[in-house]
Image 1 (cartoon, one colour):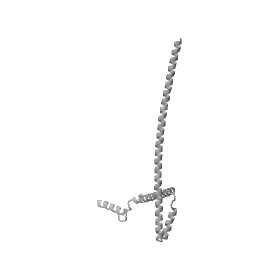
Image 2: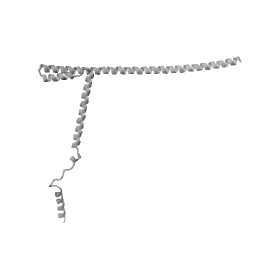
Image 3: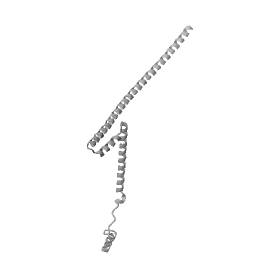
Image 4: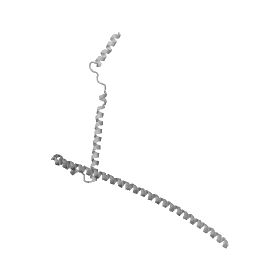
Length: 171
């Protein structure tokens, strides 16, 4: 009997070991999946960081371009104002001085001014196109395309007379 108990215990022990091994294998598989997911997430974050850095570099470049354009505009206005002052063209000097005073002092202001100018130019272009369409519509009215009214010499009376002659000659 002792041997039967021993055999049962060995079977149970072996089954428990197999169960533990299966659990360890499953845990190992889950750990590998978690590691792969973490590596994939790390790669995604690395790519996002690269995109962010590229976007930030582009924003700095565009900002620098706008800053240089604003500084160039300011220096050109200042040079023209100095030239007008040297020539004692006070009207032009005042006009240029006002332009200098109204010049934006920040890149953001410069961008807003340019956006407003672009918006106004687009609205003007749309208005011009609409006016052209209306002009074309007026030119293409159907009553303008009607055949001309007959004149007195070739009018309805002349046509009646021509028809009468045919009947007279036919008799």
